[in-house]
Length: 294
Image (cartoon, rainbow, N blue to C red; front, side):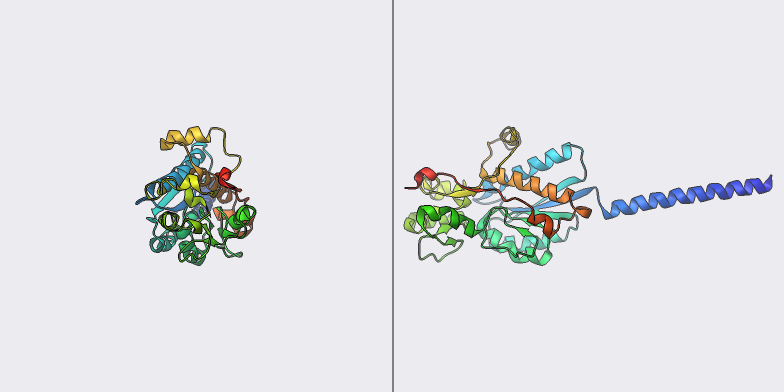
């Protein structure tokens, strides 16, 4: 009887050890693949471009909320940093986001001059990024995707209307150009030398221009990326969240966040790679007010 008791104790000890190891293995697996991952956002939340920043923010939050409420995993959290529409500040923000290893993808900035400013830092950290404003170019072998297009896309779009216009993000401008930089400089150029800006990119749709050049949005042709296949109730849901109808920036942010979630959840350990980003379809760039083109 004593020997049987000893065998029983050994048997149960082995069983307990087995289950302990199994639980430890599950714990390690969860540590390698956390059930909560984060998306970073860089946008202006203060200053004249604050409305653009919040249109972008609400578009991102709407899609993240929908994902989390669906009960699917992983849960997505948002880390949003203010760039104040300042290129020098924007250039430092990827360093801050890179300190959080749970951030698997970055969105933004939604302005051309700040989007260009962050490129070097983003490339250094090698974090997958969907840019929400047009830039000159991006490294073809990296993890930065120009989701709002590059200057050449806008040049090609306007060429049948105006001939070959160079894209421009900064002064000096010595010839007619497609302005893709900041709204304040666009307003200055429009008021001082309108012949230098016969066309513009998404910046011409910013609310910030209303104080500096109230008529600009409706007096020059401008273009912006316009996502297709948004949900039928997108406008209704956005207005319920933001208290205002969505504009191009909100729609672009929503679509980019949808792509970001798809990339993250489809990747091993929730880390999208270069090949996955290459498969992303960019939204078409559309002239918003073509009736102005003579």
